[in-house]
Image 1 (tube, one colour):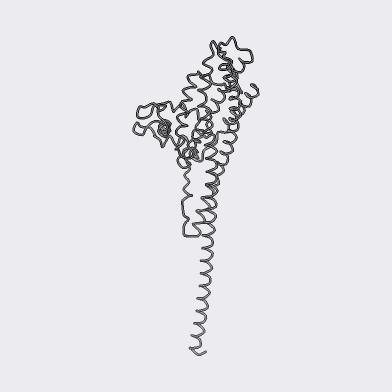
Image 2: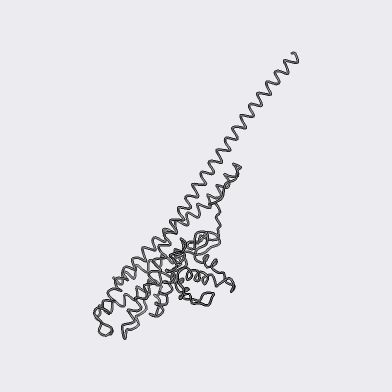
Length: 338
């Protein structure tokens, strides 16, 4: 075969091979691009799912925290009313499934009520999750802490608004940084964790997926997306569980509070409308009203002490044991006073 013809055939074969390689390369690029787009789209949907769960859970916890603070704040009204009854006996301790309702004095209730009022005053300008943080840590505990002393030496109860909330957070964190404590940052962690607002402590796990862009390399991007998705799945599961627990606990406390408010109005009617202040002049029914009202206060005081969240180095746990016990005790008491 003549050399020119051989060279011509070789060139044609080489050209055909080059076209084939180009087509193959183009297909690979197209596949990589589609894989990148798929990973990014799936990641964005996962982040949306997380943000939705976060928003809904934060709102639920804030609602619960604010209810608990309002209930504690109302105790001063009960304390001022019952203080007007002369020669009132000490009511017998009541035990519900191993839980004794707390013994308290009217003065103690008024002080705790002041602490709750301080925290409520600071919620107006506070970030989402702050009230929920008080529920996560136990609103009664937070209210008692609000009676402490700020790092300036000023009584927290004498402060108001955001200053009171900030001072309480610092107290919960072990004091101001300058005094060797954890400051507001640690106080926020005690209550809830900065990553989800003050209110919802997810735990030691750090999730940086919300603002991250996936790698330009398709395989690496897909791997990053899968890793973030697993993390999001775990956090969303926790958040959804926390929301359900918060909603359920809100209903339980609301039920007890409704009965308590009814008894409180009856007690106020006896004292302020009927003008009865001597215990021996009370009828058996009126004495029972005062006694039951006192038990309901003790139950609400206990329920507001429950920490909904148990801290962990990873994702935190929900305190189902204490939550369920408090709900069960509340039901038993409602049966007793009905």
